[in-house]
Length: 457
Image (tube, rainbow, N blue to C red; front, side, top):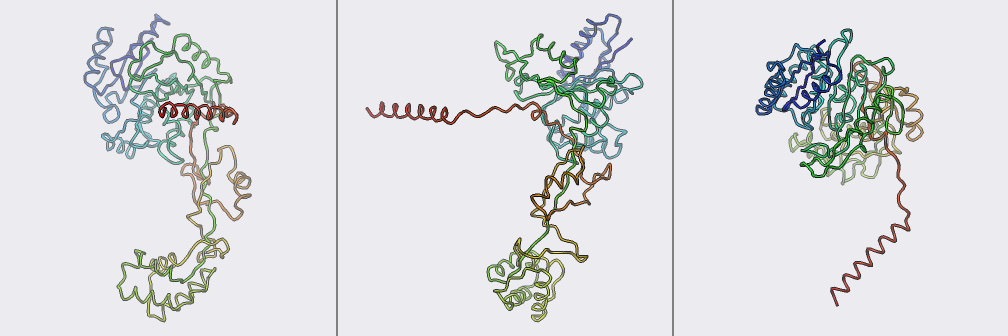
């Protein structure tokens, strides 16, 4: 049988060579076919030379940008490995990628959405997913190393969240392994191995395993740039064992897919304003852009109309104030458009919790955009039950904006997905006793005093 391995960011072919060597070790009857694409011409040349030495078909190694010019577009692969660049922007290929997303949708590689331009990691992941064999043909498996941002960046409805939603709801994410820091030559940031499959074994279906291997590191005798640690063979075996056991432990957590989802609901509160034609507020009228566009004569008339009203009377009902204001404006032969009147009301008002609630033409309460808030409701819970329990007791006059609905399922609240890896493995450490901290501070101050005395002696 033939096993195909693919790396879209092949570099000098390290992943391909290691994959080939490992498969040959465990099965002599399998023929391995290696495929890859690399952007850097020098790395490409080294990779191709290595494939030539190994007796591989060198035409399977391509030169070019994987995101904008996929030269193995029709190929599907059994195994895919990748270590794409971390946090690198994809502005140079933005037009090609965006066009593929818009015009080809799910027939292309980037159907679920696009991440922010500053980080293209998830584009490489979606590229690999598009090359998976049909599950009925045995499916495919992916191993990709990413930094932390693909786990959680982007709120509900964003490109990143929609990509995570697609991967999780289609049950492709099998496991995510957190690696130790200082593992790579050019960066010391936290990294994660994502293991994906579109043909999970029965016991893993509908579930995601998170493995914390951050403590599985051995110090190097001599650093190589930012690379100061490596994962020893014994630690590698332990990580693989945790993955294979698929059991809940201190370092291995198993979650249903829904545990990573939430609905982002918009919580509104009523607009309550008082109105006053005091000189202080009148002085602010000239700063409003809608008023500034009017003739100076009309601006002067507005000021006069406002000054003609009782400066001591505080209105706590917008309709009553608007009626009296219009009367004064008419007396001064000023007739305002809707935007101009809105600007005038805005500058003469201030928030007031004692004022009447402002309503629209249908009598419905108007929302105060300054008090607007958002809540992330777990996907497994009713948004209304959550709202009644977590929000209503604190702000009884609040309500859910039911017009904000998810595009895919039409339910109230926009669906988002994130994988807060560190939260699930966080262990609280009690702060040191105050007495101990005081003793340390006293010791430091005593040392400082002693140094000053020695200098002045």
